[in-house]
Length: 271
Image (cartoon, rainbow, N blue to C red; front, side, top):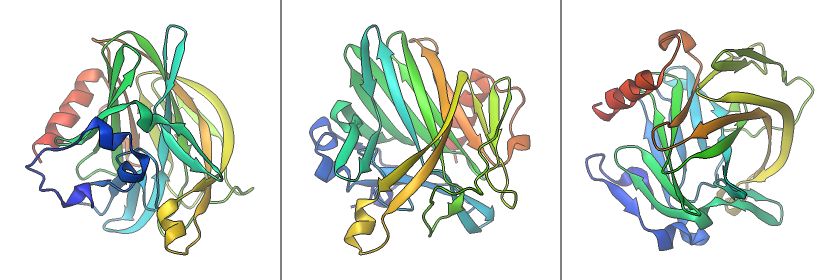
């Protein structure tokens, strides 16, 4: 079953018991498109099970030449002395972290949205592929004051291929107030990441992500992804966190404010 098969006008929800059943929630898929050939795609559980799952599959020559740019984000929420991992990742012999164990609900209304229970704090994550942009917006909201660390993972590979750690991959980050950029390969455009937090850079490769549906198909199913670091946010009920990953930074307001993010979400809601 694919969440993308549900008409856009009909809100789609997945309850707590299904969200926390990995076998079921890892097979429920969602899809976001934006009229350019770009897309975002993944599972209710949060784990990527196909090479085509990513927060941003950009179209470099719309509607063709699709590249996996931002495969995933790995979030950790800190409330007092407690820490909660929201992501889900399959490695050889290990499913860790297991963020789906915290899921209260998944919904598409109108964007893919996850609600997590982190102790007494509710965290809501929303993913919106910006209409007619090579860009994705990820927004986090919290019911209480907390810290959220969002570790970024980039691939920069053809969406039919898989990435491997290699010496040609340029790991240098350019940092400006409220944004960072990275250009791993000179023949591909740089990725700009605008955010409302602060960068904690510690570039490192994470090897052997496993994609279970590719394994079932008898195809290559392991991939290495580079993490340029984490963005740290301070959240409370009045202060959401957000980041926008884009290959077209000149098409966004500069500087970006919370009100601009709300306007982008409102514009996409009406598309």
